[in-house]
Length: 168
Ligand code: OFO
View 1 (cartoon, rainbow, N blue to C red):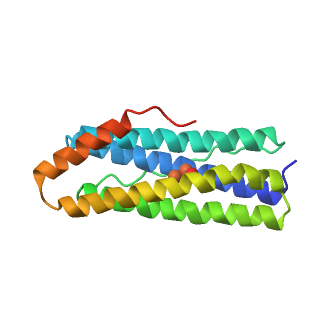
View 2: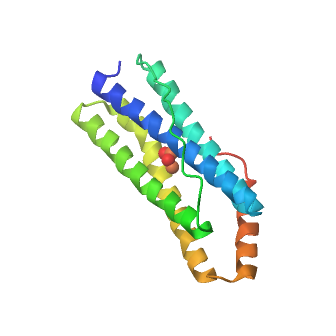
């Protein structure tokens, strides 16, 4: 059985994952309208992944005798200057998510909830990968600068990443 504190922290995390999914969906749609089909595919997939992160939490909370709360969502930003701004925003958002996840892990230790602690380790590893990927993409965009050919190739690379199956 989850303690009330852990239940509240996990519900907060459900809201965070849902907001991430929504924000990346808005970014994907922006990219699609800019003709950046590969970037859009990557971001649509990223949005689906965040929804999967949310679902995993919803199921865990309910299985452990808590009540998962499905949150209302604010409209995410819709206007971006360029693609670099998108990936900077994505990176910033992932760093915030990492801090939140670390907070939940910390609370699990304080509350001596070792099974939730174990469950959260999946999120800890996932964040390492996501932050590293976002950093690599920003580095590439910085190298490309205003080179249209470079941007074309970047978008094509992301199409490959966007078309791989979702991780479960
Ligand atoms: Fe990348 O945010 Fe989920 O965990």
